[in-house]
Image 1 (tube, rainbow, N blue to C red):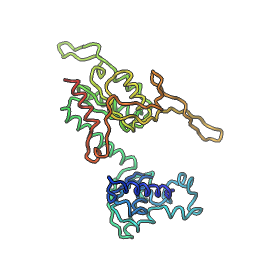
Image 2: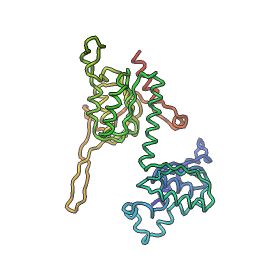
Image 3: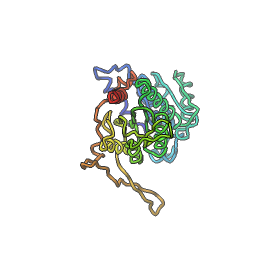
Image 4: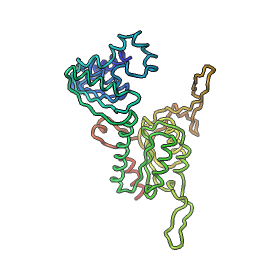
Length: 347
């Protein structure tokens, strides 16, 4: 593994470096897990092209990785010694020229920390400079820390721009845990805000669309109060009476697409962003006599006018992209548009 993928990465760098609007002296690569492995090979085998690499939890020697996965493709080290050695980054550090940032969680139970320690040993032995960032957490833990920081930044941004009048909730998937968090967020102090941004960008799907949509379409139908107290709404959480913007992008998958389609059909608000991924499929499976298990695509999902969401995806009402320049400058054009739409409706 890794041989032909690295050749591809090197050829891509050559191609992009030849374009008149790209500085060939500023080409970098970043990846996580297998992507970190690719980044590590690119900065070594492709040292003349890649000037910088960030590798998060990289496999640096296939002898240290899960043998069920590795030996499926490479057989055992005894059977394929050269295959293991020729495509392990630790054996190519002498070629490294550019800047290299190595990141790993010391409690990683997937790509074991040993991979990074061996890479460090090899680079020190080869007298190579590198940057190192070790988190005392697991593989998933690093990802969760990055996600929490991103979500908190978005929340703070919306609070500041809207003067604390718009609630913001992100769902990273459509599973039970995220549904519980969705309820907790929107039944807390956020319930008293005047508008809502529901963010389904980078959502990997699940199957709670019905619960989310039912909650969002609750409307006020009565007022009540205790003796001389203040009037309160029934239902308690009347988001159906508030302006709502749903954010989607090209990484909104599966049940996030069903939720977006339902949101649009029910007229719950405005959808902002880019078209969804078109990855909407439901599977069923069963066991075989040898104890193995299979899954097959079984269910399709269609709009009321007959469109197959796996073919069409869901298009936003207001298209707002986010390009590489936005990422570099930390611009938030999709959030900005969502805030703008709600604030106009609240006037």
